[in-house]
Image 1 (cartoon, rainbow, N blue to C red):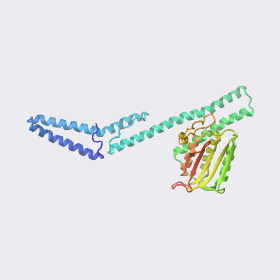
Image 2: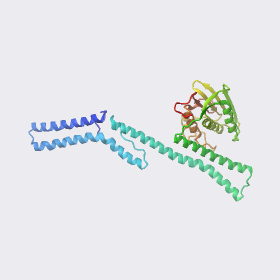
Image 3: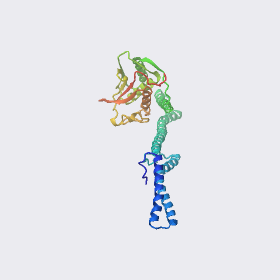
Image 4: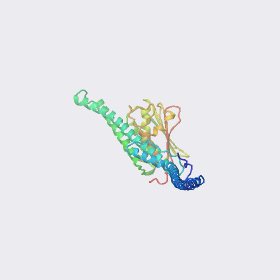
Length: 336
């Protein structure tokens, strides 16, 4: 029972508690006197009644504190599922609600940590297993060290290198690193350089760059922006059919500079368009066998957030189109 929950202040609750106790202590002796009861009996009954009522009201006031103590003990053992009843409106109720928020955040962090270990282990196991099998075959003389076998080993090594680079970027996100070396730069040469690097992967893919106006300039951190574009190009190339075309477009708008990368792949289900920017989320149809780690789009979102911009999966009739918007000016407080 928590009859004092509607009271919005702990001080008011204590006042009500004192007032009720005094009233009981005053009414019971008066009632006993009118009934002709012996005062030696009335006094202990009055004390017992006042203590019982005080215990009843005080127990409801302190029950969230007891629940928080019990929940904190379970959290110390790694169980973050317990929540506190936060129905009161006073300071204790506010504390209980803040405790529940903290418990939910800790539960989410713990779940992300477990998912990180599981997913990284899975991602590392695939190329390591392939490399081990290939090297064992080469060492045993089962296969000859021809260019094809060496290319397979190189591909798996590059996949490992790509995963380690993504994990390094992810650690920078978690560490809250926000240093920016923002400089004005021309968009077209920058995108053409990024496309040339993407073409070096050897995928049978065409890239088309369109910038409007052709002398469009953006003020951004070149290294960070390269992370954004490189991840978008890699994502588009992996999910496009062989011989397909990846379109890279940039134009100026009222919101700032808009960068779009679109492919001819299966696209992303509308229900998953927000989730694909979370870590280790690849979306329906984005398999693990093509080298995707599920970190590229999470890093792309980090870069746009760093510049005070936004990123989304835009509507399109075919394939997938990812749109990143960068403001004309960097957000206040961002170091340059």
